[in-house]
Amino acid sequence: MEGMAALPRRSGELVFHDAWERRAFAIAVALCERGLYDWDVFRAQLIAEIDQLGAGREASDPAAPGYYEHWLASLEKVLARRGIAPDEDAPPDD
Amino acid sequence: MSEPHDGHTHAHDAPPNPYLEKRRNGEETAALEARVKAIEDLVVGKGLVTTAALDRIVDIYEHDVGPLNGARVVARAWTDAAYKARLLADGSAAIAELGYGGLQGEHLVVVENTDTVHNVVVCTLCSCYPWPVLGLPPSWYKDAPYRSRVVIEPRAVLAEFGTELDDDVEVRVWDSSAEMRYMVLPQRPPGTEGMSEAALAGIVTRDAMIGVPRLASP
Image 1: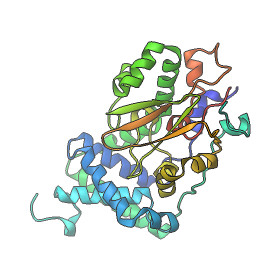
Image 2 (image 1 turned 180 degrees about the vertical axis):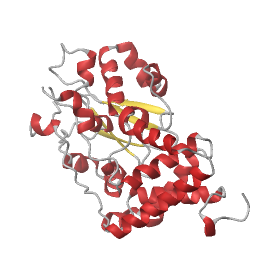
Image 3 (image 1 turned 90 degrees about the vertical axis):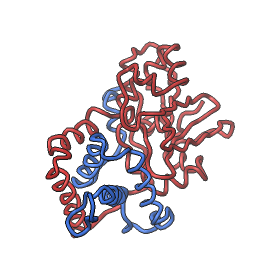
Image 4 (image 1 turned 60 degrees about the vertical axis):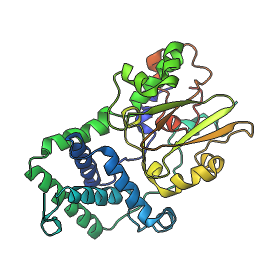
């Protein structure tokens, strides 16, 4: 059957919708690879972010944050706990 | 046996996605872009990571790490019984034999579809997914409707993806977690007896390795 070799890639829709999602993904992975946090720490935060809204509301409200909005919020919080945050949010110690 | 009822064309195309993506307006997108840029500037400025390293990660996950890896694992299992036994016994070790591993590839469990068992994978909590073999998850995998519903009514969800299972086929739903990530070993479809391992890898779809469709004959 023609074009079969392309199937594993073709079978899906876009992984990232917007450039910022791609970037947020890369930052989270890069900082984990650098040892700034364990992946489980990031994952736990991500679960908490998703959970905060509740699956039901997320399902019914198309304006609710999408997956990478949760991802971004998790990244911000995990970094803030390590003293890495843009200006006014920064905790006192590093 | 267990092929979708509506024939080959449909089975080989992307399944109808019952969960449409969300759309934001330009203002919301701009605000999100600014937040990401603020983080990037911060961590690059602190020397924690370089812009080039971020580009490299995007490139790796979008192009190198993907379901073709998983498809090669499946094709090897179909053609090498000893490899299949090792794959089912210890997924992480078996994919490492083919050079795959890394973030989210630890604790990989491979579950086998048979005539009487159909496996489907979900992560009800977030979106745990075996990156080294399947790449990044499709958007529907991350969305709340799939995450919550496939556990409650797997047959109905599978039917929405075009997979109608006979009543005597047992459906097993595997919920991924930090401890365990799952990949489905699809059944080798009939009519593929003479195909090489490389050609077989070409008929394995990502979604079949999540367990949403079954593979049809080529």
